[in-house]
Image (cartoon, rainbow, N blue to C red):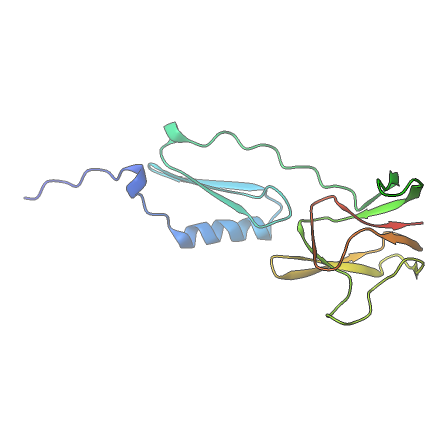
Length: 171
């Protein structure tokens, strides 16, 4: 009779890719920010830390568990009144910043070579597309939070942007 196989060590535990995909799908379909499954010595935690893709963390036995997750950052408001100063120019700018709700790449027009969605001086209506932020191959229109006039576009076409970064100023 062959000897019983010893339990798998953490490095030998196989990750079930289908299970990880199912957990990530649950996060996408619900308002959950984290989900964890434990099977024997294997523990899989899938967490969403921002508007970006779910973060997949693998930790082997509980004694080697990852530290407790930090709380997810609060969503930045789409826009906030500010007074910003341009370090290159002496005059302060007044206006309401329209901020990026996600990390991605900003595009000022629908297709290369097309006219930009808006230019400084344009009057816009609430809900009108101002620009697009691409994140994970998805084009996300950024719309005007209110009626107003575009004072300044603060980003360039195809420029990477961060969560909460000011994209343009509305009067």
